[in-house]
Image 1 (cartoon, rainbow, N blue to C red):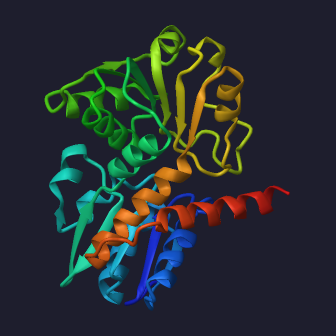
Image 2: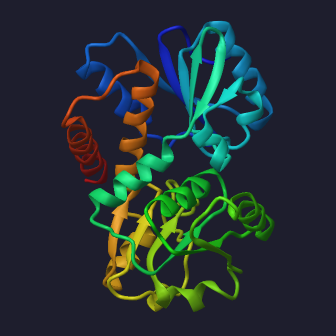
Length: 289
């Protein structure tokens, strides 16, 4: 059913057509002279258990997890690294001696992308979304020294659940925002807005998770975890307001390299991040011509 095997890594999700992960990992394997392949696997929610069974059967060495399975995959794992348990989301799974262990490299990926983008903590942060990516964003903000974060989601219960899970573990204040009434009110106060939702992702590139972005402070940073398109509608509108923008591409590359380090138990070569980034940006330019 699923095209995986002993020397094949993959990423699972629903949908999965937007992913650039195969291009990133294949570049790594070629650079390191490794005889491995990486593919994207579309897994329907009702088939998640079947996929895990296939991983065991084929001895697939590991896989990545994207929307909407970063939380749902956890019950199927034999062990979860403390950092992933802490935030309640897994994006990387390693199979070793028949056991599946979950990790989270999204936190590192976010921090690396923000540092490379020149952002430094100052004032409040807004995070849009309360799923697995948002959980990583909350942890990243806490580790980077943010003092206050306002969390929004179209499903208020998800916001409440995330806050309840995190509130005793954080050194920063986390505020439950009502997206209908509070988002516009808080926009002028924030130094950073993170989009941790899939809104604006290809093929629905004409959408934005924020209306009324004209209220955001000029000079604030907008970090969109969506990386396809490379510049989302949210990012374009943020630029028009004088904001600095950071694409999700940098996070994607950084978390992918961290996943490879887990799978192969070795550090990635210096400069490989820049090489992959340049390659992918060139591909985007060709696709948009």
